[in-house]
Image (cartoon, rainbow, N blue to C red; front, top):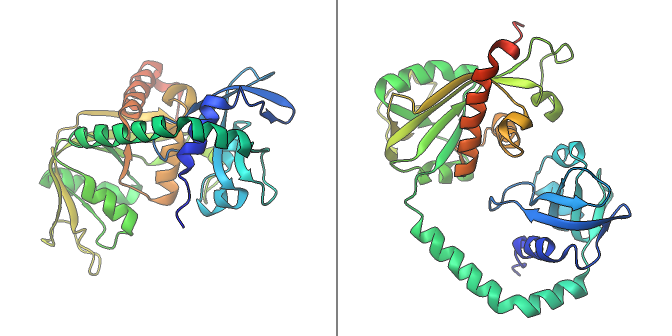
Length: 311
């Protein structure tokens, strides 16, 4: 059985949360805004809650258990006073849970079914028309990637590992001429940070760090597969999933603080996801590319204020 898409719950929440008398910990919710990124996390990027000065995020799930199976980072909600919106509360959770009023949801769905169908078909038509628009793809630049980058830029190529998981392979195969590969990383703690010592860093620690390099390169030829040796092989690994890139960067920056005031609400979360999960290439929407450009410019203006640790 195929369940209703959660986007319907998200849209209902955006349109009706203030009318259908929802409360979170006794506070009335007076407005909400969905994530403009389809399948972006969190689903609701801003909820206006009575008594709170700033909007808070929320994730929409059919059951509480679904949050865990979707492998979201719960600290995004915890650190931002967010909450969970569910059809059924099926377990305890680190943030408050709000159960949907299903009678009111059914009424809304019945009343809007034709409009929802037309909007869905319109969105599909728009997506088809825009399939040739350029897209931005984040690639995490770890310390081990630096030598590969030097060779790749010299050869005008970038290669992804030959044994990609299906999701990463599908993303690599979607890269086309005119897209932009944006290399980000590595992460480094600031010199003023004394409490971060090796190992996997927490989300909070990640936000107190710096991205050493950001550089973006136009794609000259979209995805293809090739086993010609370009990088020194590692066993049978030859990085066969490839694209051709222009060696001259479109933009570049150094020592960019991972600060939501500087980069916006969503970009730091995406960078953390790519660094920890190695989910690159990860497509990002145009507005996040602009957030990155803005962050680079503002970091240059602030100059040496954000210093790196030498450790």
